[in-house]
Image 1 (cartoon, rainbow over the protein chains, first blue to last red):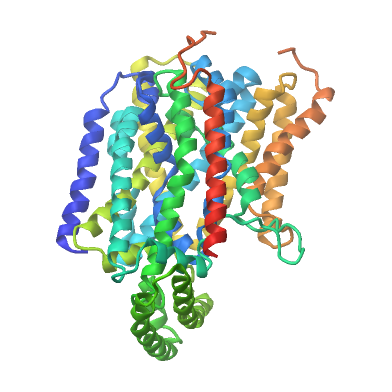
Image 2 (cartoon, rainbow over the protein chains, first blue to last red):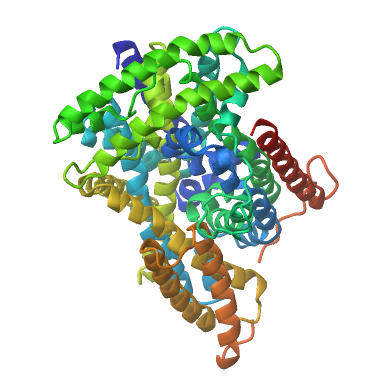
Length: 574
Length: 41
C-alpha cells in the first residue's frame, strides 16, 4: 500500500476515535453508559442497527459471493422486513415499557431467574466467540493481501475501537456508527462508479447486466426446487422459501433477542423512534444488500475485459510455488496467461459491435464462452490447494473485491476502501462489546452480587468489563488465526445453533401467557441438545438441512415442547 | 409499570399503515428481482 493510502487510512481511523471520544461524554451511570440516557433520534437508531449488522465480512464477502455464486444471497434478507414488523408489534413495546437494560431482564420478570441466566449466558458464549471471528476473518484477508502482521491487523480491526467504546459506551457507539455508515456508503458508491468508469468505451450498465445474466450471476430469485420434479432441496442455502421463512426466524431472533441489536433501539428517545428505526431498516436493507451484490456482478463484468488472476489470493499461489506443485503451477500459469491474452484481444471488438439488445445478448454469450476456458485452470489450482500436503485455503471468494481494489483503484481510494472495511468491523464490534458488558454487569454481576453497588462503581465496572471483553475477543481472534479455517466455520455454525432456541424462549414469553418458567427452561435445554445433534449430523452429511432452517427448528421446537410439558407442571398463575 | 405516552405516528394515522408499506415494499422488491432474473437469464 502506498504512503498516501496509509495517510488516508490513518486519518480516517484516528478521526473516528477522536470523534467517538468527543461525542461519547455521558452521565456516569448505567443509563448513560448503556442506553445513552434514551436520547438517540430515530435516524441514529437506524444507522446503529445497520452498522451493527453489517460487519467487515459483509463488504468483503458479499461482492465476491455475487462474483462466484450470483446474487441469490440477497434472498437471505427477505424475511428481515417481516421480522421488523413483528418486533414493532410485540417485542419493542414490552422492552420499552419495562425500562430494561438487557432483553434477558424481561425473561426473569416473565419466567424466572434461571431462564434469564440461561439465555443471557448463551448469548455471552455465542457472541464472545463469534466476535473473535468477526475480528479474525477480515484481519486474515487484509494480512494475506497486503502482507500485514496478523497481530497488528487484529489490533487495528478489533483493538483501536476499544478506546472510544470503553470511554463513551453506547453514546460513543451510536455517534461513531452514524459517521461510519456515511463513510461506508460513500466509499462503496465511489467503488461502484470506478468499476463502471474502467469498463471499455461503449460498455454500460445494460451490457454488464447482460453479461452477468448470461453467466448466471443474476439469479436473484430462485425457488430451491430441483429441476425435472426433483422436489424441494432442503440443503439449498439461499432461495425464496429459506430466505422468507428461515430468514424471518433468524432476523426475529437476531434483532429481537440479541443484546447487540436490542441495545441499539433501547437507546431511542421514544417508542415511536425505536419503531421508526426498525421499520426503516426493513425498508432499506434488501435494496442495500442488492446494491452491494451488484458491485460483485460489476467486478465480474470488469474482468471480462481485463486480465483476471488465476487465483485472487496471491499468498495461496505463493504457497503452491513452494510445494510439490511448483513446476505444474509454472506450466499452468503460462497456459492460463496465453488463454487470457487471446480472450482479451477479442473482448472489446465483441462488445463494440453490439448495438441492439439482441446484439448485446449475443456478445455477452460469446464473451462467456471464452470465460469457460478459465474455469478449468482455476479448478485445478483449487484442487492443488485442497491437497492435505499443501494445506492451503481454496476458498477465494473473500479476496475478489479487495484484490480488485488494490490492483485497479487509484492511490488514495485504496486507503479509503481499506478504511471502509475496518470501519465496518468497528461498528459491529463496538456495539457487541457494549452489549457483552451490559449483560455481564446487569444479568450476572449486579444480579448475583450480595452487596449493593454505588452508581459510580457500576459505571466503572461497566467500563472494565467492556475492556476485558475487548481483550478477550482479540485473544480469540489470534487463536482463530493459529487454529485455522476449521474453527472459523465451527464458530459460524455456533450462532445458528443458539439463535432459534433463544427466540423460542422469547416467543413463549410473548405469545403463550399460560406457559411457565419450568416448562420453557426444560424445553430449551432439550431442544438445544437436539439442535446441536442436528448440526453434528448435518456437518457429517447424514441430515441434509441448510443452517437457516436450524433457527426454525429451534424456535418452533421450544414453543411446541413447552406446550406439551406445561400441563405436567405446577405453576403460579401469571 | 410505567406506560410510555401514546405518540403521534409519523406520516400515517396508524402503525398498521407502516407495516403494510414495509411488507408491500418487500413484495415489490421480490417481483422486481424476479423480473430481472427472468429478463437477463
